[in-house]
Image 1 (cartoon, rainbow, N blue to C red):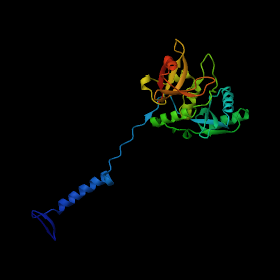
Image 2: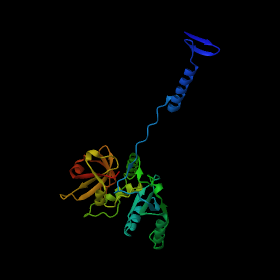
Image 3: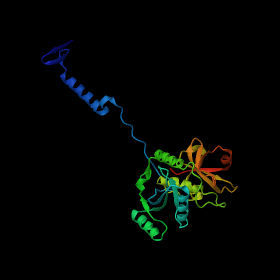
Image 4: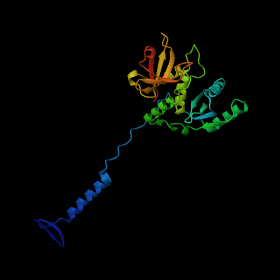
Length: 269
C-alpha cells in the first residue's frame, strides 16, 4: 500500500524520503559522468609515432628569390649547387618558383651564412625559414598519417613541371633523387641528397607494405645499382622525375618497364 501525507511519501507505512534522496544522488552522479544528452565518452587519440633515427627534422633554411619562370629558378639552383650547397626549387601555392638550401641549427647561423653569401655576390635578398613554418612542427613526434598526406600533396604540386634538376649524368642516372629530397625537406624532414643514401637511410619494406610517402627504387643493372627513385602515393602509383626532356609525372608500379626494374621499397615514417 502507498500513501501520501504532509509528512512525505510512505511505502507500506515506512518513510522513503531517504531512499529517494540516495537515488537522486546516484542519477546526478551518472549525469555528471556521461554529460548532457548522455554522450558517449570521448575516445583518446592514437599515440603519435616517433621518427626513426635515420631521418631527422630540418632546422633553419635559407629561401631565395621569387621566379615566374622555371628556368630562372633552375639556373639559380645550379649556381648554388656549384658552391657546394644542397639547393632545391619548388612551386608555391601561387604558382611562383622559389629556391631553398641549407640546414642550420639556429637562426643566427643561417643569417650569418646568408650575409656571407651576399657579400660574395652569390645571393641577394633572402628569407630565413624557421622549422615551425614547414608542414610539421619541430618535435621528434609526428602525427604520421597527416605527414604522409602532406608529402603526397607536396609531390603532386610538382606534377607537370618539366624535368630540370641539377647534377644529372649518364653515369649516375638522372637526378630524380633531387625531387624526392625536396619533397621531404619541404615537409621538415632531412632526407639525404643521393638515391644511394636515401636507400640506405630507410627501413626495408615489401612492396605489399607500401604506404603513401614511402620511396620506391629501381635498377637497370645486374648488380642492383640504384638508378631511379620515386615517391609512392597510393593505389599502386608513384610520382617521379623520369628524365631529361620529360615532365614530372605519375606511373604505376605495375607498368612493365618499372615492374621489371623494381629494386625495393623503403619507409622513413
